[in-house]
Image 1 (spheres, rainbow, N blue to C red):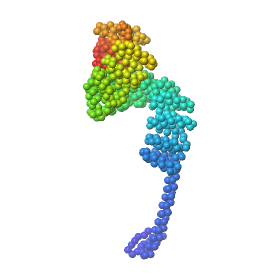
Image 2 (tube, rainbow, N blue to C red):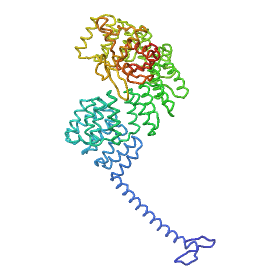
Image 3 (cartoon, helix red, strand yellow):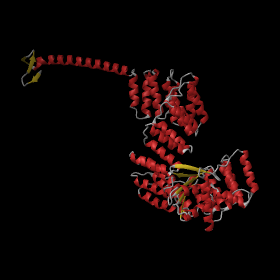
Image 4 (cartoon, rainbow, N blue to C red):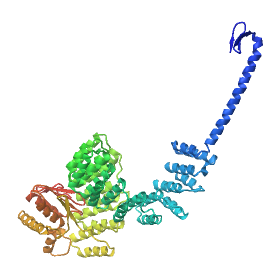
Length: 633
C-alpha cells in the first residue's frame, strides 16, 4: 500500500512501515505495476481462450440449436440458425435437421423446408411426418400426397403421426378414392386399430358422407375419446341423419364421456337439422344444468337451433341472454326472422345492430335481403341491395344477386329479374338460375322458364330437382308431351325424383308419412280424421286445387291424389295424437304445395290449432285461418 505525502512516500513492506524518497520509490512502483499488468493480460488471454473453446463446443451440441430455434420469433431468425448449423456441420445431426424442417414448415416456408428435407442423407419417421404434415397444413395437397408416395416407395414405414396428416388431406379434398387407398395402406402396416389413425379415418369417411363406413370403424375402435365421438355425431348430422346424432349423443353420455363446448355445439347443430322441439328443450336444459357459458359460438348455434325447430321466440330469448354477440350472432337472428316470414322484425333489428357498433358483413346483408324477399318487402330489399357498397363497403356476391332475383321474381317482376341476371358480371351459379326458374313456375311463364332451365342444366345437369321443376311448369301449362320428354331425359340420365316425406313429432317420437301412406299403426284413425276434416272444409267452401296434381289424369283421380298428401296425413295424425289447443309441428322435405297450404289455413281455423310447417324453403305459421307468409311464398 502506498500513500503520498508532502515529503516522501510511506511504504508498507512485510507488515512494517518505512519512509523513503520519491526518487527511490519510482522504480519499485513501475516494477510492481508491470508485473501486475502482465499477470492480468495473461489471465484475460486464458479466459478468452476458455470462452472461445466453450462457445465452440456449445455449437457442437444439438441442444444449442434446438433451444435457438424454439426462441426464434420469425423466419429470418430461423434462417440465421440454419446458417450457423450449416457452418458448424450440424445439419448431419438428424435431430437438428428435423427441427429446422419443422420450423420452416411452421412459418409456412415450404420451399426452404423441402430443400433441407431433400438434401438430408438420413431421414427418420419424424422427418417424413413433419414434411408431409407441413404440406397438408398449408393446403398443398399434391405435394403432401407426393411426399407420402415417396415415403412408401423408399421402403420407409408410415406411422401414426404421418398417416393422420394424409388422411386429413383426403378429408379436406373429399377425395374418397384416395382415402380408401390410404385405408388399404393402414391395413397393410397393421395400424387399423391405432387410435389416432382410426379417428382420422372416421373423420374422413364422415366428411365424405360415407357414414356407414365411418360408423363401422367407430364401432371397432378399442377406445373412443371425446373428439371421435364429436366427429361421429357431427357426421350423422351432416349426412341428414340427425336423429342418429342425438341417439349417439345419449350413448356417449351413458359411457361416461363428458361433452365439452365443441361437442355441445355439434349436438345443437344436429338438433337444428332434425327440427325436433322436444329435443331442443332437452339440450337447452342440459346446457343450463351443466352451466356451459353462452358464448358467441354456442349461443349462435342455439339461436339457429330454436329457429329451425319452429320457435323464433325462444331463439330471441337466447339472443337476448347472450352477453357478447358478434356479427354472426346478429345475422343468425335476422335470418331467423326472415325464414319465419317476419321480415319487419328482421328490418327492425338491423338498426339496433348498427347502434351497438357492429357493422354488417356479406352474411348479414344476405339475411336481410332474404327476409325482404319472403315478406314481400320489395322496395326495402332493393334499397338495401343498391346501397350495400356505399353504406357498408360490402360488394354484392352471387348470393345477394340470388336474393334480389328471388325478391323481384316473387313480386312477378320477371323481366327486371332477368335483366339483373344478364347484368351480373360475377360467375352465375345454379342458385341464381334456380331462383328465377322458381319464380317462372309461380307466375306460369313457360317461355322464360325454358331459358332459365337451359342455363341451369348447363351448370348442374345431374340435379333431378331442376328437371322436376321444369316438368311441373310444362304440366301446369298442359304441355304433356314436353313433360314426357323431360321424364324420358331423366330416365336416360338415371335421375330419380326425390320422394316427398312429412314428419311429425308426437310423445318424443318422430312419425314419417308419404303420399297415400297406409303403413302407420293408426292409419285407420288417420283416414277417418281426414275424412271428417274434408267434410268440414267443404262446408266452409274448400275446393281441392287440382292444378297441383302434375299428372295427366282425370279430375276425380287428381282429387284422390291431393286427398292423401303426406302433409295432410301428418296433420290428421297430429289432431288425434296430441292434446287439444297444443301446436302441431310438421316438417316437409320438399316445398309445400298450394293446395296443402290452403288446407292448413282452414284446418287451423276449424280445429282451433296452431300449425307450424317447416318446408324446404321456410316456415309457415298457420293460425285462425291465416299464414305468417301472408300467402306470399
